Image (cartoon, rainbow, N blue to C red):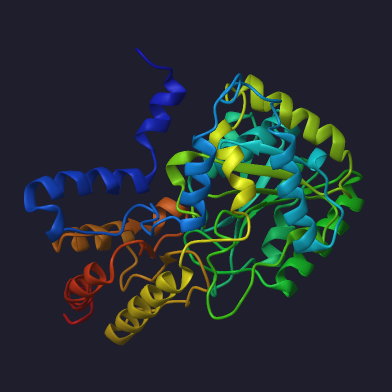
Amino acid sequence: MPVSSKISAALTNASWIRKMFEIGLTLKKQYGSQNVYDFSLGNPDLESPPEFTAALIEESKKSGPLVHGYMPNAGYIETRQAVANLLTKESDIGFSADHVTMTIGAAGALNVLLKSILEPGEEVIVIAPFFAEYDFYIDNHQGVRVIAESTPDLLPNFENIESKITSKTRALLINTPNNPTGRVYGEKVLRDLSFLLESASKKFGKPIYLIADAPYKKIIFDGLSCISPFLFYRNAILATSFSKDLSLAGERIGYLAVSPYADDDKDIINAATFCNRVLGYVNAPALMQRVIPHVLDVQVNVPIYQRRRDLLYSALTEIGYEIVKPEGTFYIFPKCPIDDDIQFVQALQEKLILTTPGTGFHRKGYFRIAYCVSEDIIRRSIPGFKAVFDKFTKR
C-alpha cells in the first residue's frame, strides 16, 4: 500500500466540505459556473478592507537584508505586542508579547497547541455540531476526541458536557461564533462553562483548558459582540486567524494566545513556540506579520453578510425550514425535513444546489449553507430549495 492504513482510512472519511466542493467543480464544468449554486465551502468572498491593501502595498515595498528572512519562531516581537495590546483592550487583562505566538492560521494554532499540551490518550471534548477537522487535529497529536451534544437551540448542553469530563480530560474545545451553526456564545454560556471547568479542574486536581477557536469573532450581527473567554476563565487559550474577518483565508495568518493567569502559561507558550518549528511551520508568513499590526481594528463589510443571512433566513423559513437564526459567521444550519441529511443534500444537488450534510459536522438531520456568495446566487437558488423541500413534505 503506497500510503499508511491510517491515512487511507482518513481519506475514505475525509471532510464532507471538501467532497461537496469537488462535486461542485464537476457540476460547474458540466453546467457552467453561473448555473451552479455553490454553498459548500466557507471561502470568504468579500474584498479585503482597503486598509489592508494599503498596508500590504507599503510593507511589500520594503527591502534590505532579512526583510523576508526568519524571525523568532513565535513571530515578530512588534506584531505579537500589537496583538497583545488588542487582547488587553478586549479583556482588560495585561497581555504581553510573551503570551502570543503567531501561527499559520487558526488551524496551525490549534495543532501547535494540541501538540504542546496533550499526553497520548488524553481527551479533548468538542460540542456537536463542530468543524470536522477537529477530529484530525486531535488525532494528529495522539489525543482522543470526545463528543458532547448541544441543546435543541444549538448551544452547549452543560449536563452532557459534565458527563463527558473524566480524569483524562485535558481540554474543552469551543468554537464561537460557531461553524456550522452561526451561534454566538454569550456571557451566561461562557460563565457557566467556566464554572463547570473550574469545578472539574478542582475535582481532578489538574487544569482543564478552555480552548476557544474564534476565527469568526468579528463577523457578528444585530449589534452583538464576541465576548472574550479570558474574562471568565483563567485557563483559557485563544486560537484564531484573520482568514475570515479580513478575507485572508489563503494567506494563512493567525495567532495563539494564552491567558496571563493560566497555570503554566509561560511553559505553554514556550512549548507552542517549539512546536511551531518542529511541526514544520517554522514561523508565520513574514509579510503578513508585518501587515497585521496596521489592521487589527478593521474588518470586512460585515453588514453584507448580515443582509445575506436575513435574505436566506426569511426565504427558507417562509418555505417551512426549521432554523435557529445565526448571530454570526456566514453559515446557516437548517434542519432537513427528513432524517437522512445525505439523501436531502443529494436531492439539492439535482437542483444544482451544493450544501454540506450535517453528518459532516456530527449532527445528522441538518445541513450547512455557506452564504459567502452573491445575493444574486442566493435569490436564484430559492426556488430549488423550495422544490426539494416540497418533494419530501408534500407527498
